Length: 147
Length: 291
Image (cartoon, rainbow over all chains, first blue to last red; front, side, top):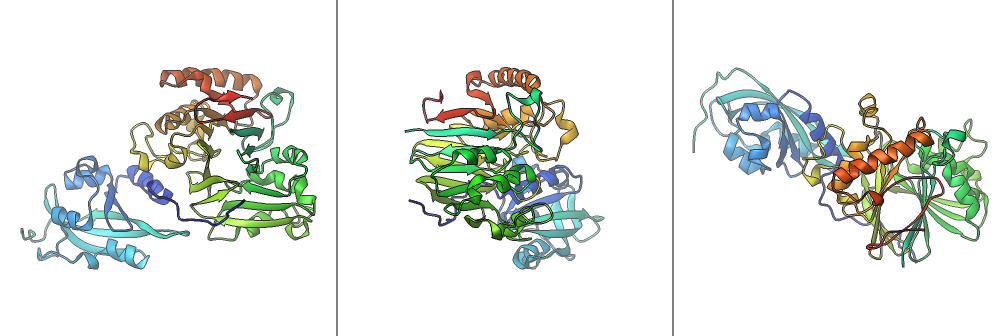
């Protein structure tokens, strides 16, 4: 008897493309983040840890809301920005690269950054997430509002 | 009830015949799995599948599970005797690709000028199954396929039959950019496939001193293979995909080194074996036995 019907497998392991992306990010000196298809941060590298002042091992996986509460983002006037308008969200939602500029709460205070987000799209099951590279600029903007 | 495994080719990269290769064999990857139901699965179609095919008389339906389409895993297809029997029904499973169908990609090999015959000319009935990461059933066994770290689209297979689990990862470099010893399990390529397998057949193409010259080629060095096997808690390990430069005497020493290293990691040296052409193994969940 032979049932050749393919079924969705139980999935506990990260998709291979995310594993390979993490391996790459581990090896580069640009601050970089890996988010999954739900926009949760599932990894960031040592350069990003230096920028944020907290290692990924210490911080752990963060949902988009948890990330926002901890680090921002904020606009140039220090106002909180909508997550939906950010480059990483666009990259995952639209499946295309996105680039943006915003400020985050970093280890040394507010930092302006440019961020490039590259979607990770596997042919067999759509988007797996995105790689986001941060390019810190001079911390010359307004301080983000607290609260 | 046991699952039986026979190795028809354990060599990697390219066939490597010669008197100095006679014991381990020169044929490329091909493993026959006989399930408890009696159904046969063939893992990869390297040159070893030719002699396997000579043994397969009276079987009409044959499933071939390809890990990927590098030549050392498909070269034997064109010389597989059942392909030339009208009564044969052959189903070929292999990795999906956005670039072309499985059939079209295999047809690049089984077509002019590389081949005197075309796929459409084969007298057998042949079907191709582009296989995503998925689970399905064959012959009463549960098959699971996942993408694993190698060059190009590559699958690893986990076969669960009754209470026995076999994992086949012949071309796999899980340590690429990843510290296997300390990484969380869900970030290790192939982890779920190999977890607590009763038999893990795994790439071990290189000695540790050879590996630095081959980082990123998609294959593993000895220490990484053993570390992976320990991380997944494999109960028995078969080292596979031998480098074509590794002659019998070298592989004998390699085996000894691997067993010592395996013991130093807390493993049982008697449960670490070398893939050897013609070797037959019986696997069960609790009592591994040499046939």
